[in-house]
Image (tube, rainbow, N blue to C red; front, side, top):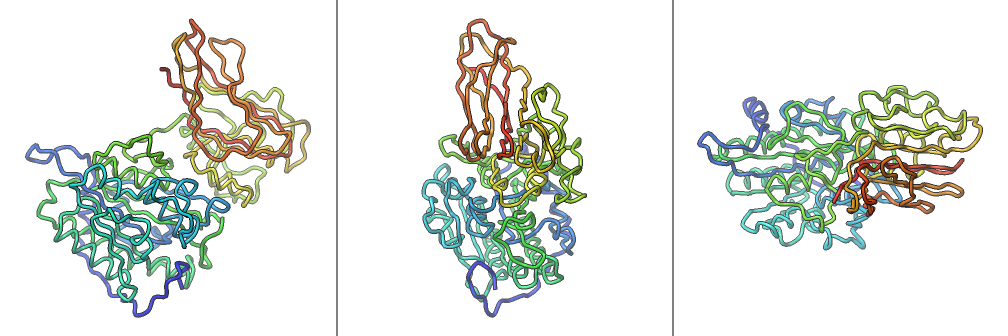
Length: 506
């Protein structure tokens, strides 16, 4: 039985056939939302298909021609999610994050019962579409009913909860009918069969691969329906395929293992680059990307964590991905996992002049790493809660460094390039951070101007969840350059994450 808590009987497993031409046609969905042959701007439309409990690596192993065609035609972006104590890797938190564009610390869905949720403050993306452009038609259909009963609000034009006896076949038929016979502008579809197979047989099973194949034929049927629209030539469909969580090989999810924390985005249409792979995309980006494609400006007051996939904003740390190496002392990570370097990006430096000796090689001083590499060093020590960092980030981890014989203390400073500022004006220092405290540990942010003495602008001596910091700076008269230092001191304590650093002059 699925962990959703719904018993399914009489589920139809009928095969949904799709022509080879329809599969090949998925490739033509990629491209810029520019102009049609007649010179008129194409009408933007959005389709989001959620495959409950699907693993990207098993999609690649399966007989899944439609999904693989979409991957070839567009973007493939593996991603990861949180774990307890923020929220379990279960459907309620997962779908809420994808659909609202914010992480569980904001929408507060932390179980499949939705107790104490905050969805009114952070509504679903279809509701935001209705508020911004009420003339657009919005439609959601799901095999797991809480999605359409709870997460999507009553402001959506149509919310359809498929009867359990009809299951994914019924959900697909309804989605196809809407696309063929209606005129939807934004469609959300959730298919549940893969998760069901994961619970029954495990992600390593042939049954799980067969469930992916069944889902693939259903995805293809919906894509074929889009292609068959009489108005398709004048439309620009952004199609996004995603998942709410992963599964273990044995079956199940909810825990903190790497397979359970897996999700992904497959996207075609709009300005998506065909055949591209990205590592900077996170779960909340699905909702933000849908809004952006429909021309809806994202109001900062909404507090979205998502960033439109059409607007990538890589930072200097992300450029290090091709330079990352495998483990040295961290034997539990796995020999095939690539994910750390001590070499900073161009313009950055690390001052280890006061740093102790010995310790775990990967974490001696500030390191640059990935979510997979860092969280695999030691599960369930809340490294999984580093939700707002993207791709490659900087980390000072005194806890892991001291897991091997060492001498001295952890004292390392990450030094930024110089940023342009205007003397006498205000500026804003922005960065993403996540800090876990244990005395005598200390984190200190210092800023210097034109090579002068660094001045402390922020100190960390208490736990700080993953947040984006915005620190107001008063630039001294005559100053033209500002430089930032992140100094971490401690011993066998915890850690500090830094990402996305910039200074914006007023």
